[in-house]
Length: 239
Image (cartoon, rainbow, N blue to C red):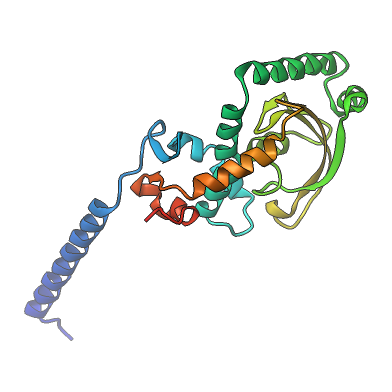
């Protein structure tokens, strides 16, 4: 059975026309989508606090790998609420001298630990007399430890320790005590040992920070169009 040349040409023309329409639609969709901001571009501003694209995504890749079904938008919101925003608020509530002093204490302590072997055993030996603590059940995902500490912890082997980490309320050194493997990355969890050097031991930084966060959430923020859907749910006045 022979094909009809006219019919073949008609079908080909129809397909080319459809492809052209699809390409036009794709171009229109791409052109209307907001352009992704550069790493140093401010993508969120509320009150006197500004956050760049690089800051809000500093731990996204790591946390996404250990996600228990959270979307990237959910991860970004949690990192913002648990780390980015409180860290900047605490920097405003404390002085540079206080933060530098905590870092100096942590660094000096870390040098002693390093000279004593630089492992978990050395951290325990030197940490116990100054209030070191052991905890269990820390998972590599949001809402457990702050993301900077989580990333550092799960990039070490059991028995190893992190360097001093200037986190939200002070400087922390963490050792990996043990690990219980799960079926997936987000099910594995570790026991940890921590030694903490606070920025301020005589002020309720935690309650002060939470109070300021609640006030800031009621303000109208600037959100870059690219991240509008990610962060608008946090702010009742975003739209």
